[in-house]
Length: 105
Image (cartoon, rainbow, N blue to C red; front, side):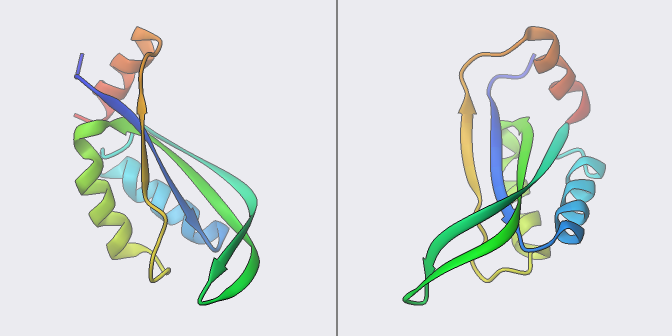
């Protein structure tokens, strides 16, 4: 089993973009699984309070893949400054973690 797993978060402005990024990440074996959820985000951008509908992606992968995933997102994302946040996985079902290894090799 690999050492170190994580979940990477990013958001997109459309379901189509969320689907495209998800499929790229899994196809390139950078992620074992990407889950997509419609959300509403409230934030300040360019000095204005903003509320937008977005799609949240939960990217399940090995920690060592972060830089490659970051690069792919930056290359294919429509936002000037996309959210790309890595959350470490402290523990998990050993069978699931092995499945992540198998699908990100």
